[in-house]
Image (cartoon, rainbow, N blue to C red):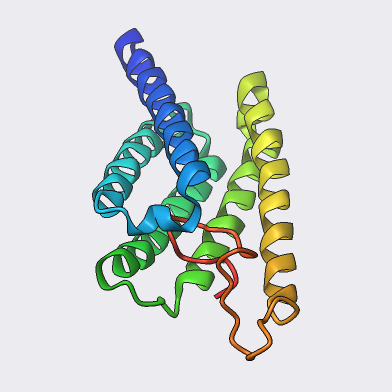
Amino acid sequence: MNRRFYLFGIFFTALTLLTGLFNGAIYFLFRERSSMLPSSAGWFVVLSIIAFIGSTILLRYYHYKKYWLTFSAGVLCILASICYFTAVCVFLITREQVSFASAAYLAVLGTSLLYAVSLIFSNAEKRPWLKAAGVFNFIIGLILVSIFNWLKNTAEIFAWPDGINRDYSFGIDTGLGIKACN
């Protein structure tokens, strides 16, 4: 691991943060309609590639430092993210609800929590920034799981009088149009 590798990692971390903030701003402006923008599929693929490269850099770091538990949890998280990426891409291409989207999203949340716990309690805990990142990711993961469960359990409450759950103003968008409460 040389200085160039670390700078490359910092660059992709910053790029992931900036593209995520931009994506959040687009969603804030357009809400669920953001998935209907002509550029949404391409933008989602670009975001995913940037995140995948950043995650691969982190995995390489964990492997080099011999943080095996964190490395393994990171691999599981990437695999779950690929499943979710597939669900979102299918939705963006077909514009039809994807049956495994909720399960894929839950898998991402679950593996993210496992990854966060591995940062807190493995050998990686010797690095204060990794431990802090683990604590932060764990808190965010718990919040997201709680929101997901709340929306899943209250979906029937928000049904319209005709019995159809339109869900476009009450659900959270878990990724450019796929609702957490499918």
